[in-house]
Image (cartoon, rainbow, N blue to C red; front, side, top):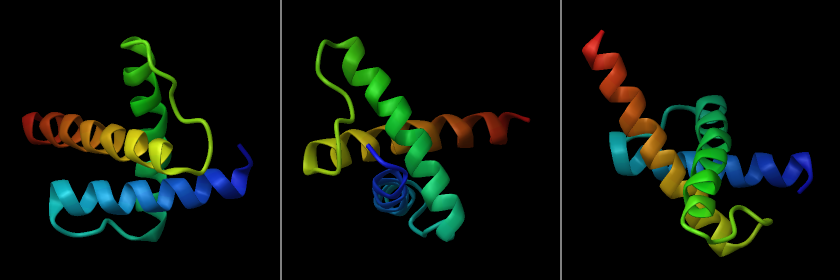
Length: 83
């Protein structure tokens, strides 16, 4: 997947994930970063269960990235509130 596709997928996944968890977006740059990290986390999680991870700019990859973004945001918020 090219860098442009990662940015688009990251923006969409980060925005959707942050809307679900925080009820508001985190801003353009943070949404992209959250989405890209979420895509990596989501890909790792689904590969752990034997499915293919993020494969391109499609609906399945977006769902995986959004789920990873949600997991990442929940863990981040739990760690941040504990400190």
